[in-house]
Image 1 (tube, helix red, strand yellow):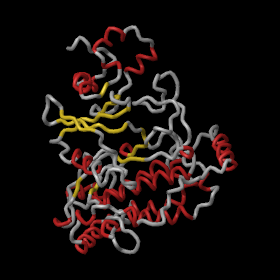
Image 2 (cartoon, rainbow, N blue to C red):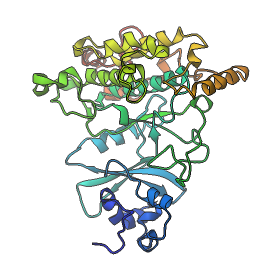
Image 3 (cartoon, rainbow, N blue to C red):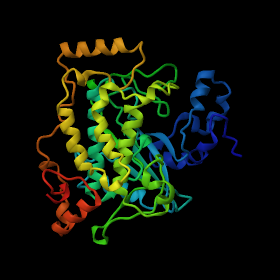
Image 4 (cartoon, rainbow, N blue to C red):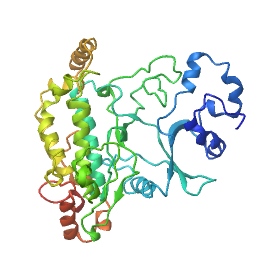
Amino acid sequence: MDSNLHSGVEESEIYWFYHRGFLLHRGYRLRPKFDPDFASTYQLLDKRARRECQTCYFRHTVMDAIRTSDGTKVLLKSVSTSLNPYEVEIAQLFSSPPHLGHPRNHCVPLLDLLQDPEDSDIQIMVMPLLVSFQEPLFDTVGELIACWRQIFEGIQYMHEHLVAHRDCTLNNILQDPTLLYLDGFHPVRAWMHPSFERFAQHITRTECWPRYYIIDFGLSRRYDPAQGLPMEYVIRGADKSPPEHLGAAYSVPCNPFPTDIYFLGNLLEEEFIFKGFPFDSQDKLRVFGPLRFFKPLIEDMTHQDPAMRPTIGEVIERFDKMTRKLSWWHLRRPGQRFDLLDRPAQLVRQIKNLFKRVPALESSLHPSDHSSAQPRNASVLYPNRDQVASVVHTWGFGLGNGNTPYCCQ
């Protein structure tokens, strides 16, 4: 056992402890508890500092670090190329021109890629440090709409480029916290201050309109239209409830694109529409009033028959149509269920926003012209436009205005 190890380094963090020197050499510094000389001082820490040291990630494959060149906080993820052969490839695809910087591309950018010096099977992806898209609570319906419009847009962009995510669930949707938290946040527990001495201070999304990202391409696949309809054997991710993943259907190959639609609809339903107060099972049976307008769309997105679900393009068209009809006050209603003690404060915030003329929706939420946002390499990726138009429609990709797939307009 390494004499520098101490109880502040959890078993799940040992990989990162032994790679601290390599990472520092490549320009990424781990937290102080990973320093070789920290073991001697660990016993001198107070209770709060020890608690901070013992706070670790649920998954042993991820770790936060500081990029030494500019102090940027990043997330490191170790990837087994034998277990997840397409993860790095797909991350690189959407982090390279012409996708990099595209306004509709919400795949988390790959900042750097490191090869484990001791294991040829392991690569370390370097990405921005993001936080859960649900923290803090959505203050208004307008904030929730802005979030889901970006999520739908991001999945649509992936589908247009023939990539199915296959695990677009709760923990794989994050947001950029740069402007949201006033004085920083703890990398593992975002609701805590970096010092772990108090809760992190934050503003509302209405005041900063964060950007949302889709992460974790471990189950994702990119398909070739020349090979026909994509049919994949089921690999279950976080959400194991799709009908095509249950019972006898589990052993039958299925089209992964409609399953992505199910994942999104089920996430919206379980986390926002029907989710009640903790341990209050009766409340979970009631639709959350301000989000009732979502219910018909969600029912179609989670249809038992995958062939009957809307494409992601149709989801966006219906979503935009629904949200355009909402009144200015509806957009300022709570986006999630607040505790009774917090509701008056939410109301006061909205009255103040009205007087200050703060918009209830992000100004760019409903673009009037989709044509400028099309993939710029469409003619290179898809030389046979008629063939691809047919395949894309059959596969369940998003449609633009009329019946022409976005990728083929």
